[in-house]
Amino acid sequence: MAIDMMIVLDILIRIILIYFIMMHGIYLLLIILGSQEQKRYHQGIQFQEFIHISQSPLTTPVSIVICAYNEEKVIVNTLLNVLQLRYPEFEVVVVNDGSEDRTVQLLIDVFKLQPIDKVFKKHFETKPVRAVYQSADYPNLIVVDKENGRRADANNAGADHARYPIICQIDADCVLEKDALLYMIRPFLYNSKVIAAAAIIRPANGLIVEKGQIIKRNLPDNWIPLFQAVEYLRSFQWARLGLTRLKSMLCMSGAFTMIRKDIFIAVGGAKTMAVVDDFELTVSLHRYIHEHEEARDFEIAFIPDPGNYSQVPETLKAFASQRNFWQRAILQSLLWNRVMAFNPRYGMAGMFGFPFYFIFEALSAVVEACAYVIALVVLVLRIDSPTILMLLFIFGVVLGTFVSICAVLLQATTRMRQENTRDIVRLFLAALAEHFGFHQFHVFCRLGGIYDLLIRRRLAYGYRERSEYKSPTP
Image (cartoon, rainbow, N blue to C red; front, side, top):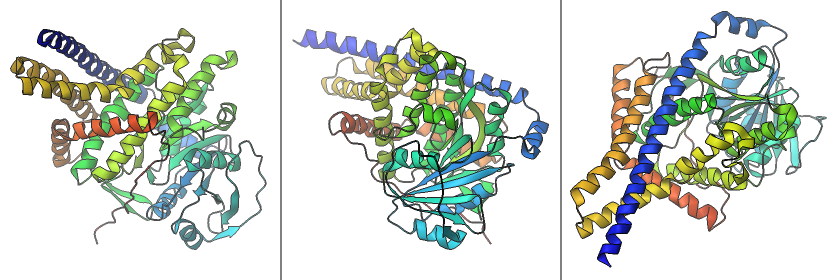
C-alpha cells in the first residue's frame, strides 16, 4: 500500500512539475512577444498622427458607455475626467443600473440633469428604463436610469441609447488619460478590418486626481494593490499583448474596451446570463470572426499604452470577492464555448488561445492547490522531503517570481516606467514577495470561484468597495 502511494505521489509530482515548467515558460514567451509587439507598435506611430486625429472632422465619433451601480464615491470624478478627453466628437452615456445609494442624485445635482424624451432604436431586451436625463452644462452627457439587471444588461441598454458607430465601454471607477480615445480609435481608422480594441489597464490606487484631471501617477501605497500592480504588468500588459500577436487574446477588459456598434449588435450584445460579460464578449467576437465567411479578415487590436486606470481592491475581503468573480467568469465562458477547444476552425484562438486559458488560467488554481497538498503530505510522511520540496519550490515559486521580475524589468525600459527610484524598488520587492503568501491566498480565492460556479451556480459579484481618489496636498 505504501509502495502504491509512493508511485502515485511520484506520478503526480512529475505531472505538476511539467505543468509549472510549461505554464511559466509560456508566460515568459508571451511577455517576450508582448515586448516585441509594443516596440513594433511605437516604431509604427508618429506623434503627428494623433494631432491629425484630434483635429479632423472625419474622425469617427464615439459613444462612451459607463455602467454605474452604487458609485457615489467615484462617479463624479470619472465623468469630469471623461468629459475633458481630447477628441473631436463623442457622447457619454451613463447607465445607472438601479443604484441604491446617491449616485443618481449626485449626477442630477452636479451636472444639472434634466429629463428628456429620447428616441432610440431598441436592439436588446433589457430591464425597464425609468428615466433618461441630459445635462444642461454638457449636452453630450446623458444618463439612463433603469432597474437593476447587472452589468451586461446595463451595457446593452447603453448600446441601445448610443448614437455613434463606435462604442467605448469603461467602468465607473476608471480614470482616462486625455489622449486615451485617440490611441484607441487609431487602429479602427488605419485598418478597416479592426472590429474591437482593448488596452492596458493600470491600478488607479495611488493616482492623485483633481476635478477629473490626473495630477500625479503614483504607485499604490498599500501592499495588496501593489501586488496587483505587478500582476497587471505580467498578465494584463505583456501577456495579453503577446496573445494578441498570436490572435489568441480571449479577454478584453471591460474596464476599457472599444467595439463597433454593428458588430456588438451582430454578436447579440453582452450576455446577461454570463457571470461577467467582457470575457464572454471577446470569445463571442472570435467565434463570429471564424464562423462567418465575410468576417474572416476581422481583427481585435490591443493598444500598449496606459490609457486607463481602474481601482483595484485594497483589502483581502474585496480582493477575494473580485478574484472569485473573475474565476467564475473565465470558467463559465470556457465551458459555454468548449467547441472551440483544439478546433482548427477557430484558428489560433481555438488551437492555442482556448487551451491556454483553460489549462493555465481556469485550472491553474486546482493544480497549484494539489502541489501544496502534496508538499504537506511529503512533510508529514517525511518522504524524501528535501528533494521533492525543493523541486516544487523552484518550479512553483521561483519560476513565477522570475516571470514577475521580467515583467517589471521590461516595463522599466518603456515610456511607462516609474521615474521615482523608490517606486521601482517597491515594484521589485512586490514581485519578489508576491509568491510568498499573497499568491497562495489568490489560489484559494480562485478555488472558491470554481466551487461557487460549478456547485452553487452563483452569478452575482459579491462584496465590493470603492475609495475616493486622492486630492493634491495643499
